[in-house]
Length: 424
RNA sequence: GCGAUCGUAGCUCAGUUGGUUAGAGCGCCGGUUUGUGGUACCGGAGGUCGCGGGUUCGAACCCCGUCGAUCGCCCCA
Image 1 (tube, chains in turn blue, green):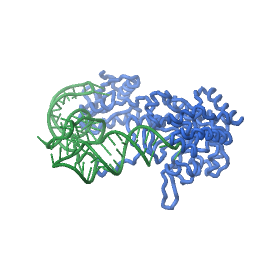
Image 2 (cartoon, protein in one colour; image 1 turned 90 degrees about the horizontal axis):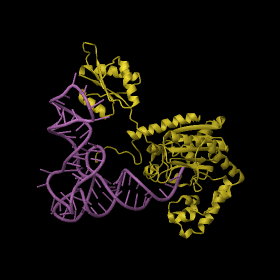
Image 3 (cartoon, rainbow, N blue to C red; image 1 turned 180 degrees about the vertical axis):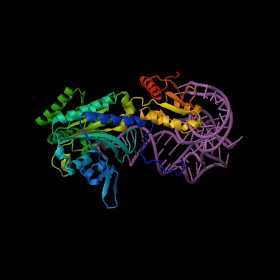
Image 4 (cartoon, helix red, strand yellow; image 1 turned 60 degrees about the vertical axis):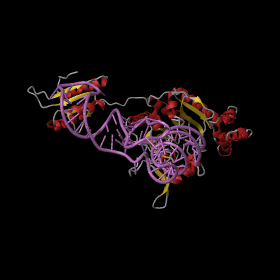
């Protein structure tokens, strides 16, 4: 391609065909399930003051420093395309007085932007589903949030994905655990990977999920969070797990599961493909399909009152990759026999569509070529619109109905047209 | 930010140790046939081989750079 046509921006996608249908199916299913759990729909701005994200996420983190799409507007204000939903929702909760609705259950979905190197399942503009419960400190909120996630995946027909669950404890538990980890790994620092030697200073918890075999040797006997949990934190986690069991949500304990940001407390979770599963091979190395946790400290970082909250987000593209399903819609092709029937064909198609019959139409070509095209496009029935003959017969439908839905549609079409003769 | 692989027609791809005028299938456009089932036949348009430089008598092919894509690392809100 050497023309002057502008190219799409790196890391953006033009989603079409079966992929687009799968994407829509994910969103529609999410909308349906969130209503079952009575999460209220919110629509959020795609951009916010940069401050919203930098304060929520932490000024110094890599993600804020170099992975946000930030720009200055004409008023010299630094704005950022949202890299996540949570910070914006937290801001709205504070600025709109949504405290009055607490505990507030909200859900949304849409595009997010992160300046990262694209790879399988990771784009610069990508799309997520999001669910949050704000203003509830109770473990029951975590349970309900996770039950919804679990049901969503089931209704999408996704298999081979499991809920990995961990607790990070309260602030004191977490700090004590972190200190013990640093001590543990520092003792073997020289034998760790180069990356992990750096993590030791910057982000020691991340050593736990290192992929490097040199690190994995020391992860097994690393200190466990359980040894550092306060009684309250232990009780909280026990309430979450027993609630999940009661709700029939399967989970596995993942002691190495951590979060990248410091504001997380207590529950942390991810739905990830089982090793060796089909889902795992479809997703490549970017494999977490849904993840979240409790972020009790976030609201304060935005200048609000201490407000407990828990939430998750899920990549729509990644979910769509796991959806196994045919999105073919049965359709009846409307084929005018000659040019003189063009208008009649338009009339017939309009009438059928008002009766919820999906119609395939072409804009030009002889009936033969239209018919062939219609078949390759998946039409199961061809309705020829002809000049009325002496018996008043105007239509000729030939149908290769296979599925029940197609047979039902064929019958309805004939009924609507008042025509009972049709050939198989 | 780092690494590997790859860039040929609208799409998927072939293209010999570097050697005349770069090919196929699908799609697209036009036509013929066929009163009807994922047709058949005939014809046509469409490519500065990602871009720039170099080596060579000669480059789609070799070298360097660059841009892009893909996959992985880092990171992962």
